Length: 224
Ligand code: 5RP
Image (cartoon, rainbow, N blue to C red; front, side):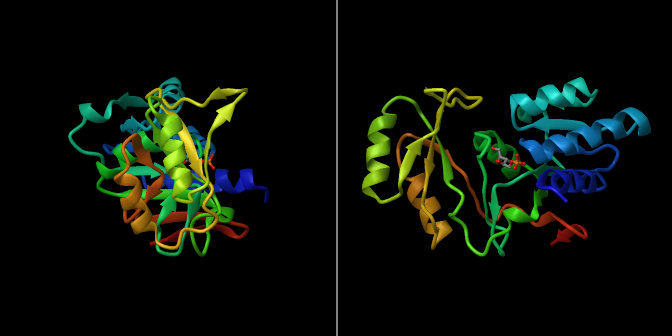
């Protein structure tokens, strides 16, 4: 199976966890895109009644086009389950997100959810985090100075650019990727990044997720 087929597999499997009446956090990325397609089918064909809380403008647009009701995170009083993708997950379910520059909104939705699930193809599972660059959403003002401070710490920072322009998040911030290679202590790194002025949010998602569906050749594997 191709990586794309594995993404499709877990996207479909995840929809089985969504029940009628739920308020569901909808992540961002190519894997979630499949999940939202299948969810749209269930809403249209089976008539299930759910409310989605989107983690990006992209997902909100896709869901709305499929007939899924979308509310803002501040318009709901709880979120039952959030289903999102991830860029890298270690054996303790700690993860890196933000490859799609959406990790700020994704984390806001995740911390406000009763339950969080990640859906990934098997290439995302790793013994330790760090070979995937760690994204930071940063305020544009002073971001070159911030880059220097991150560099001085040995974090190997690089602005994320596309066609010579800064990639902008949905909140119109910049993204800096840290090419760490290996993250020995994710909690210590998260605490350090949390303390740095100018960083709005980093892509380390720690102690947030209790279910991961991994797309494997022989089918989706649910890890809990
Ligand atoms: C977006 C994310 C995505 O969930 C992550 O990048 C995985 O994306 P994909 O499913 O396309 O591999 O964190 O900010």
